[in-house]
Length: 150
Image 1 (tube, one colour):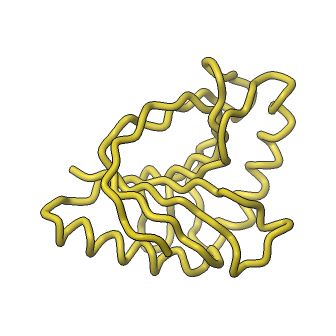
Image 2 (cartoon, helix red, strand yellow):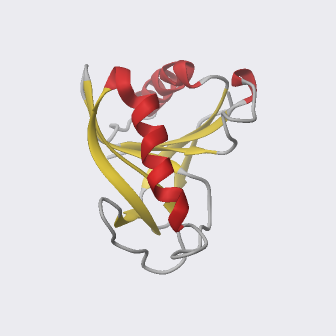
């Protein structure tokens, strides 16, 4: 894990699928959502960054999330796929190295850092996946976490 930084993000156009998901089902649902999105890359839109998951809200057993890719231009709307925009905001950012099931440890560190630095965490956050679980061992997975502050 890297140090936590306070940054200002720039707005980024994207395409995404939004769905309410049981926490226990996130890995399977995310895979299905990415499989729906990937065919549009290169044919309908130009991908300009790593895939992401944006969490609009998180509860004990259910999450409202959007899974997508940043794109050049406005994106497209087809079926469940809609244009999306990652926000311009002040956010705590950290790089998580390791398996996805340990992301909560980095989020807990971020929560403490945000509060220790006199801020409040927003009710939403997002992750960028910098390498693929299909060809990367779990201990080498890299995920960049963004947690906006208020």
